[in-house]
Image 1 (tube, rainbow, N blue to C red):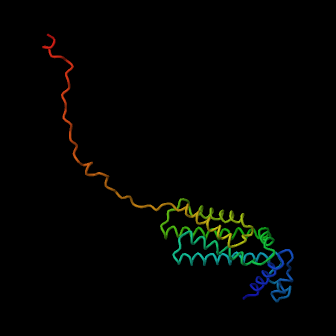
Image 2 (cartoon, one colour):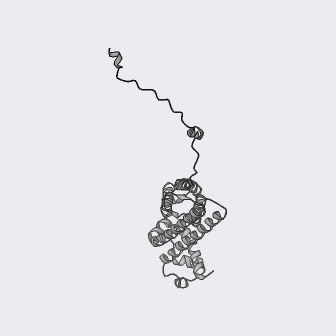
Image 3 (tube, helix red, strand yellow):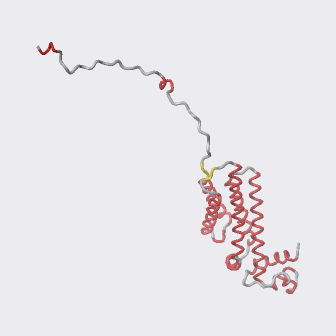
Length: 233
């Protein structure tokens, strides 16, 4: 483990224990077994150290998400199975990293305020991976999608944010993931259309009757409107 990685691990422990506002460079240096000056060789401020911690969380979540999707795909899972596993792995990793901290709300708030660029960067990476998963499974399983893969992923992210509104900070995690899975499976089911099948020319019903020659009705002689000349007499 490099000194930088050791400092980030120590800083994570400090931030979880004290939150962002009450943490200090000195506490992080002490937890890493370094002097304050030695820590400054790697990070010039508490804010820079916090950004490094948040980026580590996002990157590790991306790795967990990739591994979960690959494992479910190798097991023969369908598109909904893979997407559920993919997103659940990401969320679980992010939550587990802060599990037990009494400062979860503060840390979430600070990370959005100080690391919005990182949030946007990794949101783009998560989206690219999600769209790639949808496109790959569409080809492999010959799925017919009612909307484009990018639009489907955008709807999936909206479902994630919508579920968050019912579970602040995504807690309790088990209930959050259970409701999220229901929403994702319903969304994917609605996005997949019926497969295109070649049309089969079926013989018409009552073919024998249809081909049977019709009996022509005998023509009846029309009554003459004129009377015989003999009747006039």
